[in-house]
Amino acid sequence: MDVLEAVDAGTRVIDADGGAVLPGINDAHLHFFSSAMVRFGHLNVDSQAAGSWAAVAKLIEDCPAGADGWIRAHGWDELHLGPGGPAAIDECRPGIPVVAFDKTGHQLLANRTALQRAGITASTPAPAGGILERHDDGTPTGKFVDGAMELMTRVLPNLPPGTMRSAASQFQRFLHAQGITSLTEPGLGPGAGGLLDGSGTTAALDVLADLALDGTLSLRINTLLLFAGTGGVSAAAVRAGLESGLQQTFRDKGIDPARLRIAGVKVFADGTPRSGTAWMSEPYGHSCKHGSLVVAGANDAERVAELDEIIRLIESAELQAGIHATGDAATAAAVTAVIRAQQGRAGTNRHYIIHGSFASNASLPAFAANSIGYSTNPMIRFGGGAMLEGILGQERFRRHQPLASAAREGVKFNLASDSPVTTTDWRRTMLAAITRATVDHPGPVHDGEGVGLRQALAGMTSLPAWQDHAEHMKGSVRPGMAADLCILDGAWPNDDEPDELMERHVMWTVSAGQVVHEPAAVPATGFF
Image (cartoon, rainbow, N blue to C red; front, top):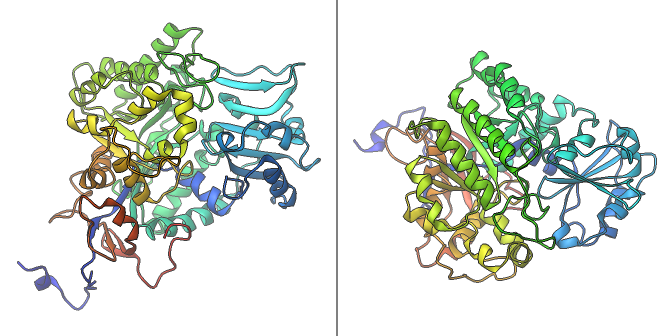
């Protein structure tokens, strides 16, 4: 039957006028609340706002304190600014506590007043899985890495629910203007105080529930629970979190799981290459060390055993494990843990590796054979460029995010932003996956690991739907699927001209059959 035969007086007809009609964009790794607060709540000190540590300090000096008396900033990047962050922040705004989160969400800086408020002194020990940087005399410099961040974030006043709701509503409109209809929020719960800006606490789950119950939530959101932060996760913490029943929060409220659901548990297996906390099989970085898992344990063997037990607990709870692993040794340990936990029941819970790094592409078939997903972030590689290559080495950087190899092996990989670490502009994410370009080398890099235009689109539509256990209802445009659509102002580019994608603009966004963005709406500032 011609679709127009179904039109009646209550039907709104949209003329795409030759524009491409795509499935709604599904960002499979987007920190919704942190991104919302970074864009609509915190002081921005990223490389565009401040090109030096002196400029960062000046922005903080000029910023009024919040209603709770604190200043929260976000976005500094040591790879661009160089050393000197702790000294620049230390004496800023005496008498007013200041915390400044870095771009990756794995480091923060605190001024002297904030250190005093938190009671952090030379005698304060660094927690497992974290680094508390110190001067030669043992006093803290004010720089905290991974698990140590919680020493500071646990004393931050809670964000008011009204503030969180307002930022979330504004950010939802922003995402819809970009054609985004679905996302995975990778880490809310009791362990989120040490992640990114610390806003993804259990209170964020309540805000999401309220938005869903009053009909305000028009995004589809899958959520991973975080029971421990970016360092020191233990099987005991995960067991206690699962026994708390927090994973039932949305079900108990009667919320439609197609709109909002808790999918599983986020686990930090290691940290990041730039902070030296990624676990690699070969030395890397200026210190030429291997790093390690950031899981509880006194040595590598104990930490691997602890990771195995953590994944076993999540599998037994019939939940999905989203495992952060940025080193090749951490990735291998995580994959082995999943295979052991599944015990021949591959594919039921669709566990997946976030970021991922590989000693060789020979490890990729294990993903496909065991239905393990792979969530990648091409814009992190793009933005790291020569600086990340300097940390990893030329050969490791060339293999970084081997998407073409993953596709050949049948691995279910997706492309995601990891916002606020990178932009939510999915066009740029796709192009980075296609061209393998970096900020230092903007032209195509023919390293054999770029994917095609349609593969990249699948990585932001149908493959994230697989990760969400939702390929039956979203991720493609065909009869019987949910009406989640992104309509561009021009035809889809030819495969040999992917750069034309940047000339396309989102005109209409439809979520569950409802128009959530249209040409008359305010465009997404900073996107087009």
